[in-house]
Image 1 (cartoon, helix red, strand yellow):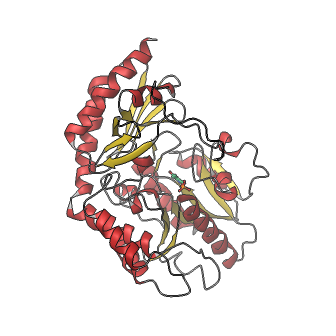
Image 2 (cartoon, rainbow, N blue to C red; image 1 turned 90 degrees about the vertical axis):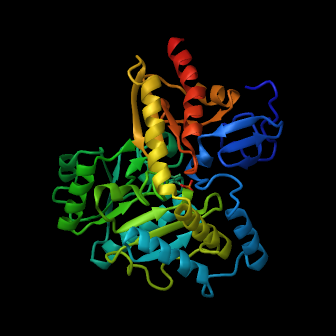
Length: 399
Ligand SMILES: *Cc1c(COP(=O)(O)O)cnc(C)c1O
């Protein structure tokens, strides 16, 4: 796509990604540079991963210190940093216990195991979990079965059974779909769908769902892998609705780039797993735990929740001003630094054009431009994103 394309298809790495012809070499804050020295403004943040920005002056030395002390031990032993990070997550979520793993799908897989065992413990042999249209929960066999995207599922059947799928923001639809079904054990959803196109659940709907879960004794399991960890301006996106889940998978932003996942559980779910029910070799290793602890510490020291809320609102308003109301722009939505601009047509071509112009972002669900930058983004950098993006969108709409 660019004249100086450095990277061709690899003869050795499997071709599971449609990659841009760009290879990034280093970063600083929300800037990254490729192997040819070209600079980009990074509005993608490694897909909502690089919470504190690239090469953060507090995170890097902390990780270097940890690498020199202990990278990995084993869950045969106690890992004090697990206790430290778990305490931080519990205090900020109002939940009680944490299981650590290494990625989003692993956290979701653990949540689904919790739901099934919750059912079995109640004498339900064939537990059913309610999931949503357009949901994305990962690419393992169970999590792709929970995902509401035929493209993710194609070629990987038979899918795991035990799911019922419903539309978002429609309380009557879920009541109807589960009516008289004694096997339902949990509802599983993203507060703001990420891959599905930055689709928020409405606050009233979240509150109605919480009531329904209480009434029916279902686990409320909220996949905050993408929208959690401060991205929306609160620690967890569901907190805007004043509710608490029973199970909350986390990953992406939790380690600012070091692979990590976690399942945070409240009283109803925290005791479901006993010794031997679940485990992982790498999960909870000291390096990943240190990354999580330092990420949360830096977020608080630098006021990044407030920054995500403020700069996110500023970015959304600037996008509204430049693009809102244009024929072809359907909606600008999201919260904090998780923003989608939906067009009335496929716009995947914008990803390459933006990169050429020096801006990294993604297009999801074919027609939604998605921005999930580091939570350190400044207003000036937000203005720069808009200045780079708006002309590209206008040009596309004029084609
Ligand atoms: C990215 C994502 C996942 C999968 O996480 P991986 O680390 O890629 O396995 C699951 N759920 C949501 C909401 C996500 O955004």
